[in-house]
Image (cartoon, rainbow, N blue to C red):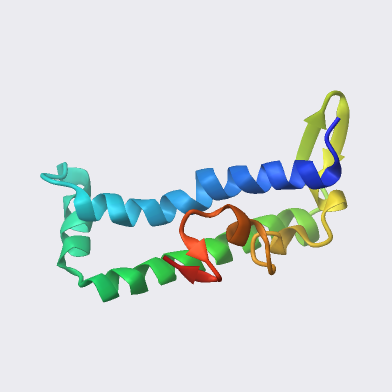
Amino acid sequence: MKSNKEILDDYGKKIISECYDPGITYIDQLRKKENPPFIIAEEANFIKSLSDEQVKGLKKIVHRTQNNFLFALFRIFEEKDEEYKMLYNDEGRVVDFVKISEMLKAEHLIENGWIARFSEFVKDDEVI
């Protein structure tokens, strides 16, 4: 059976790799896309028109937006409504993420939090 820390870390890795990092990856994918399909052509052309410095600034904005989104999402489970739960089933033991975290809404933001430890795009609190 996993410890509470292992459960939180596994969840954090999943959140960062499947939710947070793809938002930043998308910028790079658009920039490299040759002959983008119509549905993303406007976005791709916009990204391609930016300088490297501007792309870095855009990534910082996406980073901040992703942080704010995750904070607000986790706050729903932690503070807002008792009827909403985030649960993990560990071999029949049901674990409430809010109860095993000191502050779920900030797990991704805190020093040495999920983003710092698991993101491919953030090192020393800087988007790379």
